[in-house]
Length: 411
Image (tube, rainbow, N blue to C red; front, side, top):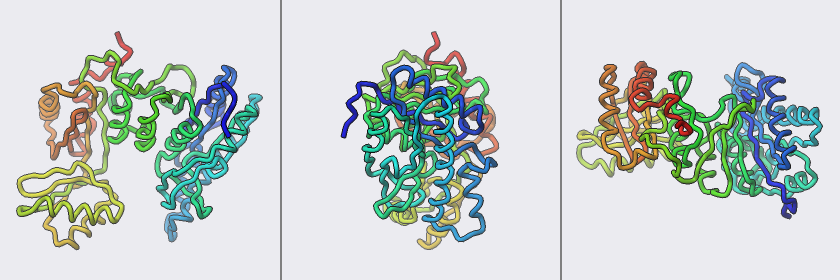
């Protein structure tokens, strides 16, 4: 079945903080109604309402299981409840504005996943039900973050999974545009809570989007960003739910006039750096370590060699798991806690000399120590102590001019 209507389809995804209270939900509903009135067929994807301590947030639901025997299957049953509540309430809100709508769970929307509970991957979307609703100009309100596997078990897609739902639905429905609405009016050059003068970015390349999401920017799930990168015919925008701004548009090529080398500074906190002594065969030792770590579904970052061996870092939550693995291998290792990864990202950095010098000299000026660095053509990452994080972000933002004058729509 395919939609015969010539009206374009837009996916509108609303984050939990945007749906936190009745006033915000009404503003979100108005964004959907505006699109409908413009002759667009909107599809709403919603996250769980609010953030902890809101009783319907995902974190609040997870806290109910503290101290209990946590089964991944039962946790999916529990964690999916927040989106169910959110979809039902938002559908009712749309109805008060005169729109016909239908709340759907992930499985009712046709989202089929693999069997990996708590971190499932979408393998197929059957769009028959959605297409029928859209043909009748009924707005589907879909629970993000969830699906169903071949055994009929509810699954969830991991943190930020509603973004994955939105982009995947956009691809399946051949949507013209996916809009990610939140309580922030778009993407900024750094975290405004740390650097208050962070500049607004009106346009960002899809490669930069992937880099910033992979390196700590909480604007979108990295898997969703990667999915969107392959869909050049589908627009992707980040907007504020209050409708007062033009937002940030993702460009599939770096074709905008942007003479500055750096687009953003991002960060990831609560990291641990491991150093493993390996003087004989680093390549073989690293292969063994990575094989054992990956078998436990643990992710490592910032891998590099040094004179005495191997360095890498991980999330603090995996510290003891990794330490146990290294002990079982008889490895001679040490680790340091309380570190943060800072990443300087920009498509225009490619081939430009002097970026690393400016980063190092800036960090040296405030007396911080760089424990490790890795780089590519468009991203340079450094590891610093947590206590210096805020000052490091500020000094790097100032060094590369990431203030309002650095906005891509600035003249």
